[in-house]
Image: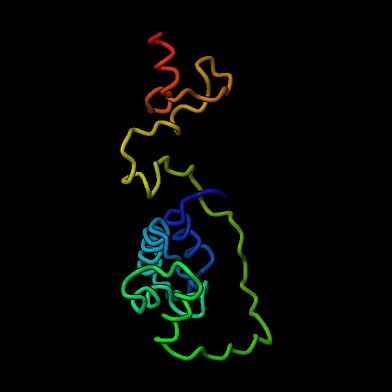
Length: 163
């Protein structure tokens, strides 16, 4: 099933009777926007959300804060900023058992996903038409031209036409 998380998760929360959602924090701009939408949907469904850091031993936002507000770009920067945070905790023991999650089927009502340009559409500075036009002019599934995608023609073609 392919759907945007903000569309699919509310259905899964209900169908699977989800009580908790646990995921790893992602610091990319797209991921922060996506995660905020998922968190909102979870909270509206009464699902408790738990977000944990996982890419480093420390919280990525706290590392940036301890690195004078700048992203850590090298391992030595991570180590130096991390040393200002706290000692690294020992890992928790591995679970001895995992509960049966119950039925996790997908037989609830499904609809085709909404055709949108995605979370990063606001950062584009042109009219992206790649979703609307995926086949050639004869419907032969040829690679679309730049113009069909809403982009200006390639510069070398413009110069060739002038000659």
